[in-house]
Amino acid sequence: MSKDLTLYDYSPITAREPIHWPDGKRVAFYVGLNIEHFYVDLPGTATYAGTTELTPDSLNYGWRDYGPRVGIWRQIELLDKHRIRASVLLNSDVGDRYPQIIAAGRERDWAWLAHGSSNSHLHTDLTIEQERVALRDIVTTIERTTGARPRGWMGPALTETFNTPELLAELGVEYVLDWTNDDQPYALNVPGMLSVPYSVELNDIGIFLSKGLTGPDFVRIVKDQVDQLYADSADSGRVMALALHPFVTGQAFRHRYLDEALEYVVNHPGVWTTTSDEIAAHFRRTTSGS
Image (cartoon, rainbow, N blue to C red; front, side, top):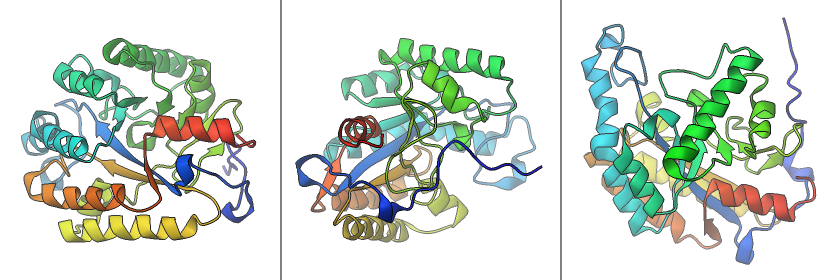
């Protein structure tokens, strides 16, 4: 069976209404900080494939568990240093399990986005009524634990069903990150819903795990990304998302490279350091096509 996607229309970036970010900035930059929960009896993101069939898989589970225990605190130190408010991709199962992380985020006024229930359960294979119940539980749980109702969504492993955006709109969610096909926000064919750029390329899992690149490679990639987006944005603003995971760039030997990359971006001329919530809200306020 072949099916064309009807969620959004084709729109070349060269033929759109110009986007103007606040204060004349040209690149809107946000950090997508993935704060996730994994279950010990289910497979998840792995650093070594040889043990993924074991239960428990202590090697890979322990590596992931380094994130909330150690790595996140190292990342928070850098976000504070560079005055970056995280846009948190939050599994709803995190709130009751890692309350100290939630407290740290509330102190820093992080933006909280719904990121499914856990990263052991992809958001797939649901009937519309099952999904409606699941999404309501995810959104209300995050609101209860963080004190803020999420305005954005990114599915675990960027998963959706064909019904997800419409069901999210019913809950007051305003944008999704799952469709990583653009450098600008754009309106979906669901009333009130936007797509906001995220990245599977400028993503520490892809860079370090999938491609096996190094810390200096990471810095070069981040610098090249912001430099090119800045060049592209002479007539219309762009978005740069940097996707981070505490068990990857929270590792000690990568700390200096994340520091160097963030230093370059936040001090780059024309960069607006912000959150995905603020990007969506500004686009909606100032662009007629939203």
